[in-house]
Length: 133
Image (cartoon, rainbow, N blue to C red):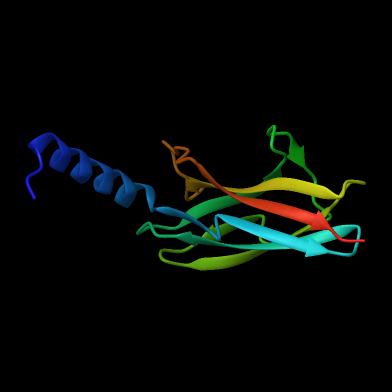
């Protein structure tokens, strides 16, 4: 099958972008949760695939990007070593709603204490929760 060179180059560019974007990891990217209680639990795994330790900060947001104060959030601020992973558990209130969507986001910055520290970005996982009655 013959393909013009521009399609081949586009595919190579896309694969390069996806490889460089894999340095930050949140899994699963989407999850559905159901429960009978006034709160729900969501768990994500974050991973540092850089060769150096990285400071991770986990926060929970509404769909319109307002900060949510979870009832409980484990490993919210942590220094992850190279190729290390950690499970983050969030206990979040339904806030008198029968359905709630939140984003659990992980931001990574290089190890603290040095000059020239840069923010490497943020990656989020979407949690859709439904309260059963």
